[in-house]
Length: 194
View 1 (cartoon, rainbow, N blue to C red):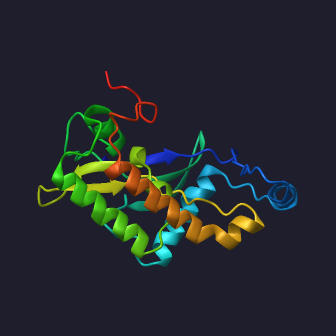
View 2: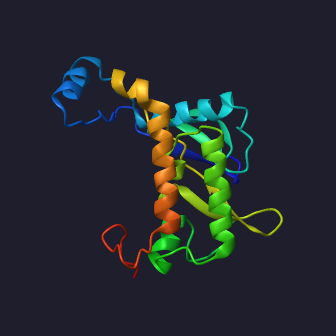
View 3: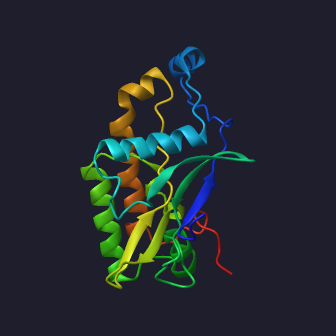
């Protein structure tokens, strides 16, 4: 295997049924729940990005196909090793250490990334701080790259109706939480750094 690639193993049998609190939603869930595994969600996210013609975007790790392993099906993706900060490989790591986004270049890169997700209606787990790597671009500038593109799955009829708009609201909320929250005042959201 090429040293610039890695195999990402995703559980193919662990589905996550949606939980809701209203009797009507529970009734719908009971009869119309679709179980979607992590592997299926990741592949659906890759398909979504591909359908939009954005598969070669610098904001996502490159995808090279599927492979069989002794642990199950895996996907072959670009290996990220060009991290900008040695002590903070992801936005989550950065927030654990600094409690707020203080670096103006990182703020600008995140704003550009989230605007890209929203403009292209890409609703994936790539909006979570633990799924965004802080990288050094080819021009030696700070950039960001998502390495987890699992879609937020529409698991039932109601979610299918609201799916995209609800997921895009989630992406906007994640951006606000990352950029605008002072993590010094919100210690329960993030682990204490050592």
